[in-house]
Image (cartoon, rainbow, N blue to C red; front, side, top):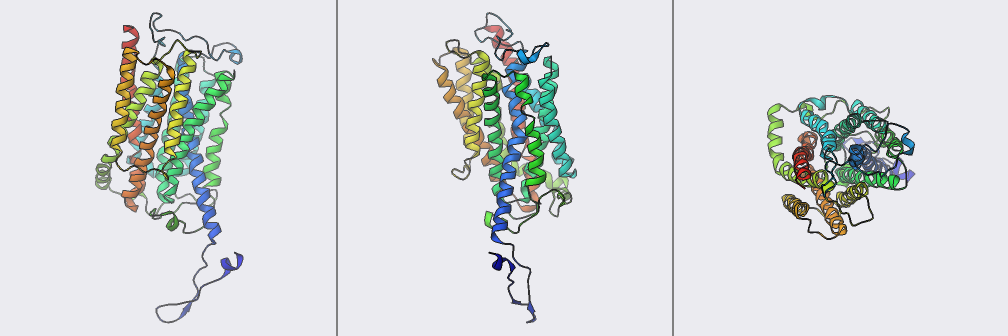
Length: 438
């Protein structure tokens, strides 16, 4: 390998003069750089969405005031919830878990709406630093909070971290091989599964919600380390194939100059060009909005109301299991791009809306006899949602030109956030209506 790496090919130029081109990077180095970038984006996806997922998993605990104002290290991880209506068959909290969803998503929505207008002008490194600091702050603030209001402020920090990170890292994929998109997507799915599973497992093991959240402070540090030390310096390149993308071995981001001024940056696009590109993205954006509207209406509007009294699981435990199974489905489908690619994502939107209608009827009529049937439906729901996400961004990467790809990836981020925000706004009045009615 060393002899091949050091050899030079002898060629003739147009005038017949013998030339000696630069040596090609060793294949091993190119492969190593590719694997570092793919693993780097997987870890970035994992770390970026972790705090967001944990806050949703902790939503029932936050609204049940499970962190007492006294010595929190002795708080029972599963005390009975504070009822909204003691006669309600749903055992409702005084506020819907959709309130946590809105605190966890509205700041992200604002960031993603502003991103196409000017966020791209900010360097990548400061954005990543802000994202990491906000993630750490969210864990600390919610862990030491003595009130729902303060906890929701911590949830807002998690939302800022996740939203800023998603816009930043998806835009950054435009300068790497197309393979990193599926690895990023798989990482975000892993965040859902590991975030929900770790919160469920640690609280089930008897750890207080406060100590559970504090134990997760290593995640923001891992995000910063993955970006600055694992990723290699990005370059504009054609993502038409993984082999073509392996153009050269690169150096780690730290000290090598993050692409703050990029040759093919979306900053050179005019407003008219941006609008034209955005209109072309609507065929991808609309189905993803519908998918996320339906699934998060289920997750934060119906999960709390799908309460089974004839099981050994408490209400809080049932909610955590719902979240964990949903995230398991998301992880599997977001990691499935190499096995299954879906061109028409509107089919997934239709199936997810049917899921919503079915579970809404069950909340009203309570016809499902077992919680295990709900478990299966929720796992299926997660599979649909994850498949819609990864295939949407993969299709966008395939169909957009080099000069538009960075802007397109960042702009399409609005899809899931818009759908989630709309679902949260509608889930709040639905919660109050059903809890007062039953």
